[in-house]
Length: 273
Ligand SMILES: [Zn+2]
Image 1 (spheres, rainbow, N blue to C red):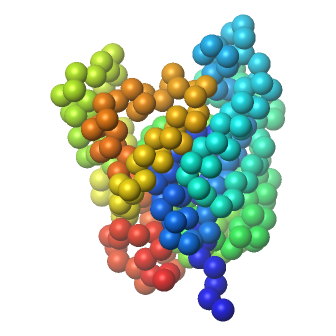
Image 2 (image 1 turned 45 degrees about the vertical axis):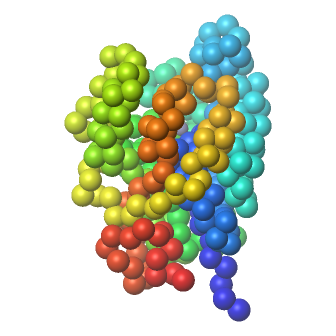
C-alpha cells in the first residue's frame, strides 16, 4: 500500500493559518493529501469584545481564547483541512507586552517540552512535509510565539527525523513591494506604515511558490471567520484586486529536502509523488 501523503503546518495563533498557508491547506486537502494544522496557543492576547486590548476593560483572557478557538474551527471548516491539533499554550503577546513575562506563556515554555508534544504528533501523523516560520518568526515579524513555533518545530523535525521536506513560510520582498504599489494605486490609506527594506523574506531565499489562485475565495472566508481580530487584519481592507494578488500564491523557503526535487519548485510535494 502507498504511504499516506501528509502535510503538517505549525502556527502560533488562531488566524495565522490563513494568509501564508490557507491556500496550500485547501489545495492539498482537495488533492487527497492528509492535512494537519497544529496551532500552538489559544490566542488569549488578541482583541477582546469591542476591540479591547489586553489590560483594557472588557478584555478577558479566557473569553478571548474561547472565541478565537471557535473562530479557528470555522476557519478550518472553510479551508476544509482534515485535522486540527491544539497544543493549548498561553499566548505570549507581542514583543514587549506585559504578557511576555507570564510563566505559562508559550515563549517561556522550555523548547524541549513543547517540541516533545509536537514530536508526538509527528510520530502519529508521519508528515512527509512540514511547514512553519523562519527563525525571525516569518520575514522578520519577531512575535515571540512565532519565534517559539519555529524553534519547537525545528527541534521536532530534527529529533524525529520524520519529514522528508521542511519549509519556512516566506513573504518575498518583491511581492511586498508590488502589493504596496498596488494599494497606493488604489488610494488605500496606509497611514504612516512604510515597509522597511529588510521587511519580508529576501527573494533569494524563496525556493517554492505554490499557485493557490483557485482557493483565494476560501482563504478570504477563513480570514473573515476570525472576526474578533478584524481590526488587525489589514488585508481585509484591501481592494479586491490587491487581495486576489496577495492571496493567489504562497511562497516558501525549503530548508530540508531528502528527496529528489528541483531547486525551484511549484509544489511542496515535488519528489514525493
Ligand atoms: Zn500569530
